Image (cartoon, rainbow, N blue to C red; front, top):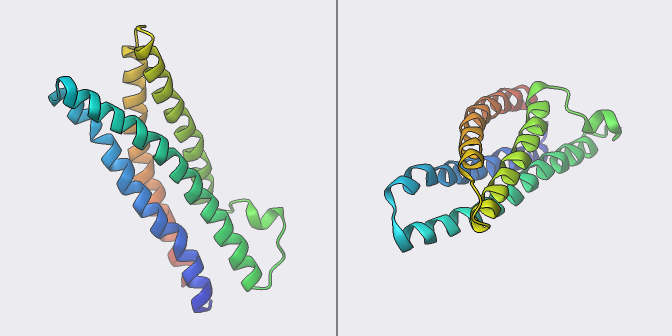
Length: 157
């Protein structure tokens, strides 16, 4: 594998590490929400919602980058670019698509929580589910990143 292919393959994991860092920062809201009061809490919640929207778009971009890297790598290796080249052939790829589904659900729960709160409706259950899902996703992200590291070693090695 040439240096260009290695560089292209490394774009996704490096971008993913930045998104993981942002996901961890986003989850800090759970601790902050307990300690903050008044205007500080309102401002922090607004920031959490804005960052959640941004994080959602970043996750989609990182997954798109993975597909683009796969396409570029396939072309550089003079392999056929068909549906088989785009379908994940390993657990890391499939778990990434599962993660996208969970991220869509997490994002939707966050939006529903915000809407219910703004409408003066009960939102505690939705907020709790949103937080619990983010906890589950953090564990899955760690597993996904580790599998990606192993897969990368397999590709480069």
